[in-house]
Amino acid sequence: MKFTEYQDLLPLEIRETVQIIHAELSAMGFTEEIKEAKSGPVLSYMKDKKVLLNYVYRKSGIKVRLYAAGTAACEDCLAVLPDSMKAELKKAADCKKLNGQPCTPACPGGYTYTLDGELLKKCRSMAFLMTLNQKTAEYIHSLILHEAEER
Image (cartoon, rainbow, N blue to C red):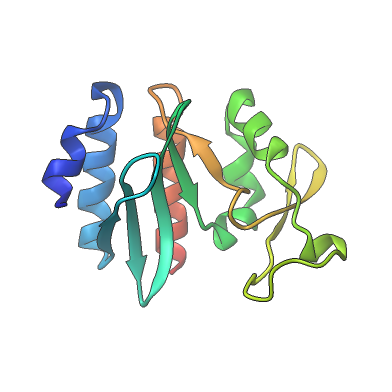
């Protein structure tokens, strides 16, 4: 599947945002890869074999999984998020490794960050899994660009 086919599957309310992010990441040297998954196609962006983000389909809608080591360290980036997004980040699964529990051997460990004065230790796969919709698109776009510029 090509990006042009993928974008046709997106809800209209987020299609333009995804197209803009695609153009910006492509200009920064990121490549895309689309793979089929049980819940729908997964669009990933990577550079130097490191994944920046995935767009994933869920019953609740399109989610963005951002691998955000740089963003996690940027409290100012997180402070401006709307309460609904902050709640999603706080609700993410805790990282077993960072909390002294065994995890899979391949797991590199999660992210430690502060949000609203609360220290969080979240799983790398779930920490920045955010719902993409009209209300969150601007904030997610900003987080993606911040992280992309860190790489």
